[in-house]
Length: 176
Image 1 (cartoon, rainbow, N blue to C red):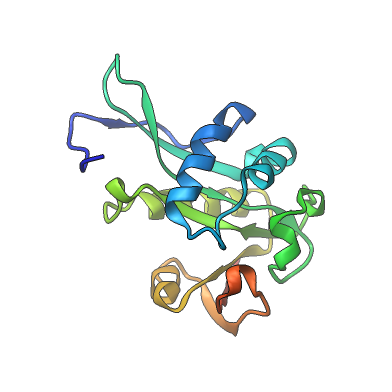
Image 2 (image 1 turned 135 degrees about the vertical axis):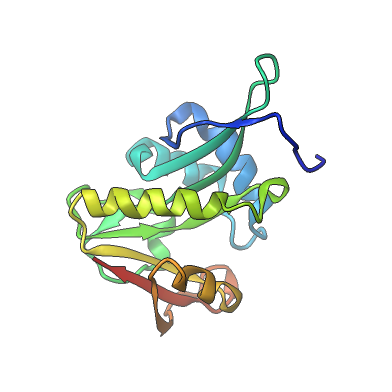
């Protein structure tokens, strides 16, 4: 796909439904290497348990061209203060009344990167967590993204115990 140019309109950020599985799975596989990407089964399980913790940004490319998923953020809520590897595949660990919003992924289609869309969706997820009375938001990231998340107020707590995808991760926390 070539870099999209206007006219396209960004739609309001919304939460997911099970009907979004194909688009979310497609974008997840584009954005992450196979060892790090969530499986379709894992995404499906998450959507069945916490669809309201998937925030989607779509672009409308005209009345006859439909919409395209541009960016999304997803994660569960828990009282556990650290993001654990088993959370990625065990949607049953989600606690709707939990203290911490975990972020599993911030995905943006390559054709739409460097336009602020990931930040827009991430800010929306952060504000939602704040409005819901969470203690804060926790995510893990690679070295190259520490400064990106720090710009949103996340503090680097050092290397995570996570071995997800066989790579080292920093645990980052935004406390309200």
